[in-house]
Image (cartoon, rainbow, N blue to C red; front, top):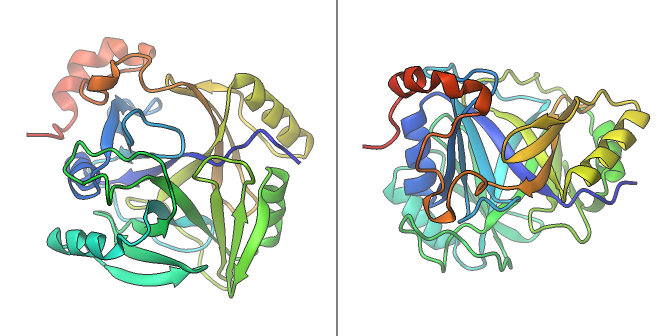
Amino acid sequence: MLKQIKGLHHVTSLASDARANNAFFTNVLGLRRVKKTVNFDAPDVYHLYYGDETGTPGTVMTYFPFPNAARGIPGAGEVGRTAFSIPTGTSQAWIDRLTTFETAQLAQDTRFGQKRVLFDGPDGDKFALVESDDDRTPWTGNGVSAEIGIRGFHSTDMRLIDDAQSAELLKFMGYEHSETDGSILRFVVPGGNAANTIDIERVPGARHAAQGAGSVHHIAFAVENRARQLEVREALMDTGYQVTPVIDRDYFYAIYFRTPGGVLFEVATNEPGFDRDEDTAHLGEALKLPSQHEHLRARLEGYLQPIED
């Protein structure tokens, strides 16, 4: 069993409009845009990162906004909902705030004794705010007070037809099965970061998901550094997984592999971080380009949709 993985690093999804995506995460949810860059493989598409003040691993939601992309079709073999942590007792404050912004599909429920606020993003993306005792410091620069501010990720939901193989994978990655509630199985990394929870929802008979705007593209798990990442890569390959070589993503190093249930997993390093090319006070303000795309700057700055007035 691996000991290097500490919980979630980031979650990456697809969107259809960069401006609407940016407004939702900064104005509605109150997160900080910590990086404005482009997709390494499609530089005419933004890669936008939202999180706490510095983009601490375990807080960062990222998006590829493909202009006018068709909506994804929900189903099995995907991350069906991404959950953020909010302070205990703040659900009603968030319901009031989300109502003001006319947020879609607003609802409440309880899972494993924790109150949740459920809602959709601009592309039908499924989110939850989960009340928990979480002492991480929220970003408050966008008008959401520290008393209610989002602390980072709480968990993600994997929707699977057959949970057995993915459950074994999570256990191999250092997660422990902690609770079961009907069709929901909860897995937690002991001693991990605050974003240390994965829920598996069993959906036998469900159709397979089709990715599009509003779909989660992949979830990334955090390791301390490149040495720990190489240990994880070797262990996964020894177990039979097809794992990519290490890829330099400028702000972290990444490896990827597909899970038995169809969800794409990434293992990302906590180093070097989002302040490697911007001062912390100005994170996410300038368009940052990977070195291989810097020669395209003039064209991209003219082509990419402005995301702020």
